[in-house]
Length: 115
Length: 114
Image 1 (cartoon, helix red, strand yellow):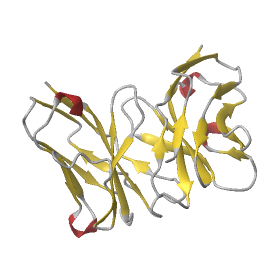
Image 2 (image 1 turned 90 degrees about the vertical axis):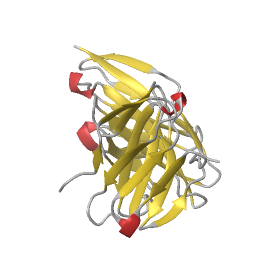
Image 3 (image 1 turned 135 degrees about the vertical axis):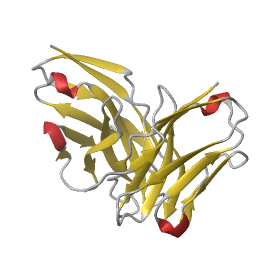
Image 4 (image 1 turned 30 degrees about the vertical axis):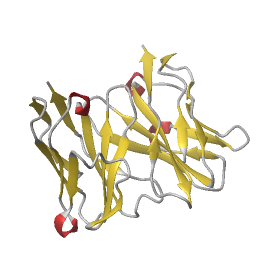
């Protein structure tokens, strides 16, 4: 079974530039999550999709972050413009059951460095 | 809102010794509790969960965790540590049925000494 695919693996940009991350969840997983993991901290949920609808985006900085999941499969997360404090690993995860039983499958993440 | 605390940034254990990684939680409803492990340059992997039932739950790689309602704790344990267990461990919680969000702790780095 293929896992959660994310790209790119690494990205270095300057502040005020824009960046986009891509995620392909495990086939058949209706729920998709984007987490932000800052060095030394646990993953923080940015947005949760159920199919192509947003379930929770309460911690997404909507003035600069946006995410979409067209057709309920792949998803992209965009930051525009980036700030220094956005430097983090962005993790995509998917699950079968809205995560109700807690079993999320994570991708390897995209490590973003904002200079 | 639910929260989870991992009081130790790092735990050092000699190979072959038992290990414990601590976790405490706070919820308004019923706690759904989870442990994940993160190896270098890898995504988080699910280890085990407590939903209901037996307070001692068993998971992958010989790990187990004990749910203690009175102490609001969910410590991760293993009887005999392996060097390959060295990794970053995250405790997580969901506040059932109030919230679908899964909240992660800050993580504990486990270092097994050969």
